[in-house]
Image (cartoon, rainbow, N blue to C red; front, top):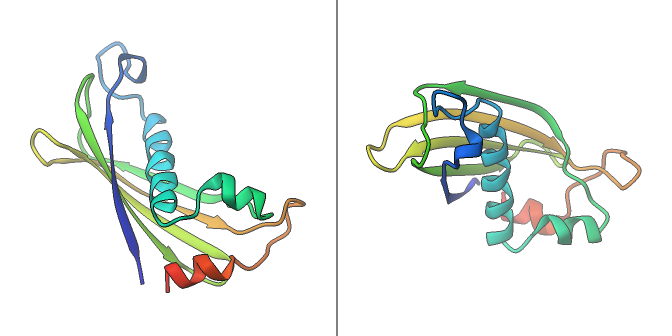
Length: 132
């Protein structure tokens, strides 16, 4: 099973270059916002996760840029999460300009569940159940 959520961001001036186009690395920040909002909406914040002794570091990240987003655009970050295995999760993202519905970028991140010592471990049962 996959779970999805939507987060709204407005492009800030500091996120753009001299041409008022969003700097490419900011999409990864927005993807993180979408991912954390999705997990929080399902009852599992990063703070709760870390308190329970789990980390969720990024193993792989990619982004395809389809059309520039610009200063002051409202961008919907649509995030979908799924289990890859008992210790891995993947999240897919679409950044969509609200004004015209055009996808500005799409991406994916893959994460592993780890202990505070950085060793791989099974995702908590409550997370596995949410994404089954």
